[in-house]
Each structure stands twice: as structure tokens, then as C-alpha cells.
Image 1: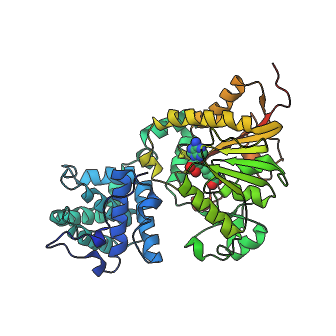
Image 2: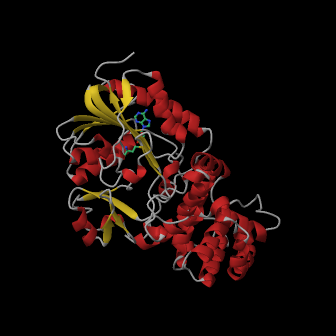
Image 3: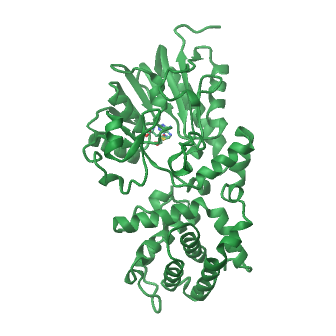
Length: 456
Ligand SMILES: C[S@@+](CC[C@H](N)C(=O)[O-])C[C@H]1O[C@@H](n2cnc3c(N)ncnc32)[C@H](O)[C@@H]1O
């Protein structure tokens, strides 16, 4: 991923008339939000990366995050509505102007920010940058009109279509049907709850954190605020992990005392689950930076694993009692939490990733003992990265078979078991009243067994 090239507006020295943005309360958060939007939309930066750099108070950081995440979730709708107000389109000489307007329109249409404040701060932001200072009047006019006519302008836009890139909507309609594709689009518009995996006592932690225990044991918390400030974080009692991401490791069943390879392990959510369940884990990942996060996470949790930096396609350890391969993928199942993925991913990414996944899966089977289990998972909604990988493997090799999941085998999982005995979750699954407390990431997981003796 590229990192943002532009310095935050708050630190730019455009010279002359632009005024420093930190002078007005609330402006720094908006400036950082606009910079981050620019980085995501024009430089391919990941959202979290884009918000990583600038120093901000936690409250301002949270506000900047909400502006950018909401703008990305509603990007198609926002562009459609702004397009109606900008008959001549966005001036090519000021690409940043679009981000100023997107951030302003997001606050007016989708956030609890008084319109006059959103308009005023957006105009100040336009004035603070050399490339947009000449468009401050336009920003004022467009956003004021939006504040008056926003509802009517949005009425003609179907968000299920507008906010999902065409290529993804078409794929999901083909794979899951039009109705489900619409239901998934609706979930992608909503800020998801915080899901955590606890070492022990989910009910106790749910009570302490004002959350609820989901049927699979994940604790779900609404309106959590900064994660690090929550009870139990510093003490290493739990880690952040979407409810769906917590499922693959559980397909291995009892792992106490087993030697388990966790391939593509960083930042370590599944490694932590396996270690906490008593396995001797070898965690392999090729990214040194992500392994640093894995080591930090394990240290905070007081858990230990053997960590190997290297390519899992050629990793020469083993044999292992069991292998978990949580393969790199398009991550289209995580759009609720990472709305930047709708911007950064391209159709051509799917076959490239599928080729890598096939090589990783073949090698994962080679690393397990005869009779041992392999779990293959991806956080993708694309069948080429899930179901099709397993079908290909089973067609190509006689030394591996599916070990289908049975009903009632893993608590809370029955809803997601496919006719083949795999697991498929969708963002629109698990509707539990309001959308804000519903859903889970889109995941695929299959359990396979290396045969004790290959059959012809
Ligand atoms: C989906 S993430 C893994 C998430 C992790 N299993 C967890 O639960 O926290 C995929 C990981 O695969 C790693 N990766 C990609 N290609 C790899 C390869 N050829 N060998 C090893 N790791 C690889 C990436 O660095 C990334 O950390």
C-alpha cells in the first residue's frame, strides 16, 4: 500500500492568504479527514494507514475517522448528489476540492453535525489550501444548497446501487442472488459494532463492557470508543476480532497439545485463539511489519508462539498435526470495517490472488501429517477465493478429502454451514434487530483432511 504523499493541511505552508487550520475549533479533525480522503481516493492508501500519521486528540481522531469512513461508505451517493450540484463537474486544477466537498456533504447528510458548522468549516478548509482557496465561494454555495435540498437530491439515488462498485454488485448478485446482494449493500452502509474474542468468561466481559455474547462466543460491543481505553485491553484479556474471523480456528476442534502451523498469521488473531486453546503454534507470515504487530499482540495477551518470517508457499517446517491457512485475499468480506476496499480493489486482483491461494493451499496440505486437518479460510465474498479453491484442490489431489462440519459440532455455527459442510458467512447474516448490532464479515472456511493413505 502506498502512504499518503501530502502533508496534513494543518502543517502545509501554502503561503499568502490561506490561514492555518488549527486556529478554529474542530477544523484540525476535518483537515485530517480531507487529507485522508485524498490519500485513499487518489493514492491508494488504506484508510487506517491514511489516518495513522497526524497527531490528533483521540476525540478529533475518532471524528476524522467517522467522516472518512462514512464518506467512503456513501461515496457513490455523495458523488451522485454533488454531481447534480456541480453541472460543470469538478475543476481539474483542484482535485482536492472534491474531498473538501465529500467531507462537508458527509457531515451534512449522514452525521450529527449542524449544517452551518459543516458548511463554515468546509469553507475555512477550502481557504486553507492553495489549490482550493479560489473555490471557497463555490464550496459555500454547493454545501448550503445541499443543506437545504439534500433529502430531495438523495431521493433519486438508489444507495444499494450507488454505493457498491458495479463490478462487486454484479459478482455478488451472481453468487448470492439480487435480494442478498441488496441486503449486503445495506449492511455496508452501517458502522459495524466492535467484536472481541476473550480469553475466558465471555458473559463476564460482556457485562463489564456493556456488550452481549453472540451465539459463537464472540463479545459484541456497541459504541465502544477508543479500544485501548476499554477495561481488559491493557491487561491482555481480549483482542479485537470480527465474529466471522473467529470461526476458522474453531473448525480445528480440540487443539490442546497439538503442533499447529498458522500460515499467513499476522496480525495474529487466529494465532492467539490457537495458543489460548493450548496449541503449540508456529506462526508464519512474509510481512515483517505485520509480524511486529503479531508479536506485540501476543506479548500484550501473555501468549507465546514460534514466529517465522517467510513465504508460506515454500515454508519448510513440519509435519504438523494441523494447519490453518487464512490466505491473503481481496478482503471484500470486510467492507463494513474497511470501506476503502471498495476503492482500492480491482477485478484483476481476484485471479492474481486466486493463483497465490492455490499454491498456498497445496503447500498447506503438504505440511500436515497424514490424517491431520487443514482449515482453509478467506475473508472474501468471491467464490474464486473460497469454494472454487477447495473444489480445485479436491479435483487435483487424491491425498486430501473434505472433513465436512456437522450440525451442532461448533456452537452457534449451524446457520453458516453450506450443503457441502463448509462455512460461508455474509455481512447480511445474523440480523439482530438494528443493523448497527447485526451482521458479520463475509468469510469462507473449509475443513479438509489429509488422508492417512492416498486413494486412487
Ligand atoms: C488475511 S491476512 C491474515 C490474518 C491473520 N490470519 C489473523 O487472523 O490475524 C493475510 C496475511 O497473509 C500474509 N501473506 C501474504 N502472502 C503470503 C505468503 N506468500 N506467505 C506468507 N504470508 C503471506 C500477509 O502478510 C497477511 O498478513
